[in-house]
Image 1 (cartoon, rainbow, N blue to C red):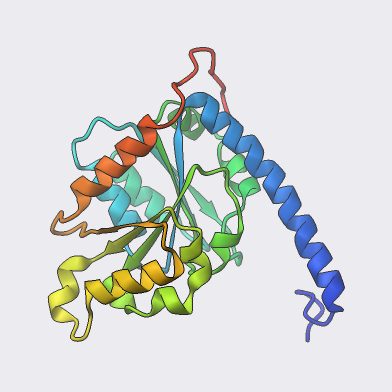
Image 2 (cartoon, rainbow, N blue to C red; image 1 turned 90 degrees about the vertical axis):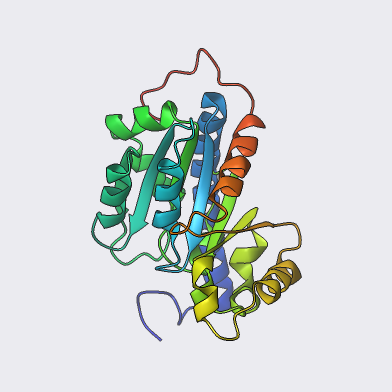
Length: 244
């Protein structure tokens, strides 16, 4: 037990503190969600393990040639490498470095949008990607004001991941199974089994097998993005904010 994380506190106190923190986060998320909705921006919480292909997937969307205006923030414990990659792909991006936190929260996203450059890019975008910190647990707990949750799961992680880490998959609206071009080189890896395991824990989630390298599934992902964006209320002509 330690004096920092509260693991030595009575269970009731821990629950109360956690509930209070989530309540504050939920208020911040609701504030963001209202502005995204008013601006007609499809905000996505993109989650998955480190190296699952989150950044590569956004790059593939950016380089597809589709008429979608994009913006992004990328969360990592350190460096702005992912945001730099996205900027090189033509996506206005900002980096959120969390230090030791294993997830983003709504206040972090809100703070990032106080930068005038990224705030304007998000406001003018069709799709705003919030690339969460690489982690298969904690990011699922924190609302960021998103319209949809996207989980990226690479075939190299194993077909059992949805069963071992069900919390994240249960909140997923879309599961992108990435790096499918590697399946022939992974003995025992079956996309059918992986789909079945996803369905066991997240029966309502859509599943798109995809490869940012070969381009397989990117068209289907783009169609999903366009459909979700079209389902939003039309952008308000009066909605012109410098930041949320």
